[in-house]
Image (cartoon, rainbow, N blue to C red):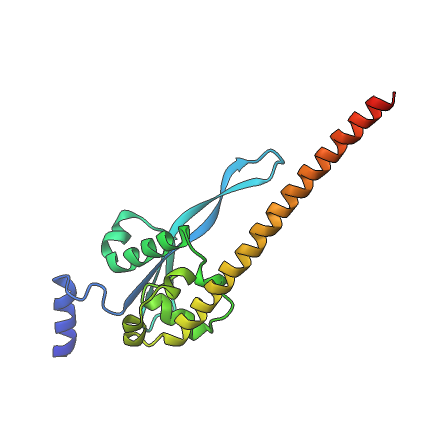
Length: 180
């Protein structure tokens, strides 16, 4: 009985407000009332918050408001970090070389892109035990750089072939004009 009173007291005082409460911020595509040129509905990204409580199957899921961001500042900061990393990198969700466990470990430590994972120094990788994941990401980035060189060369080759074709056509037109 004393335990229940203590829990009640802490709830009243606002202590433990988020004990056993878990929040996750994420983006969700929401249909708008607008239509595009083809008559299909337009969608927009909306930040949502999913709130779960321990030992309860109910899930609170709705667009995130300022009160949610203020109540769960760490979770919201993690969401913002993920968004910032994804702007300039390859999301780990799209990286096929990690297991679900490895992916969740990286997310837990605020690592959301292959580039960030590959750039972690040895000391930090050892501290959070993601050496294998980091090495896989480094190898992937090295291969991507090598592939980029090949694709750049192929692009230049295509440009040169187009230029040669144009010059050949001009020479042909000049020759035909001379023969007449």
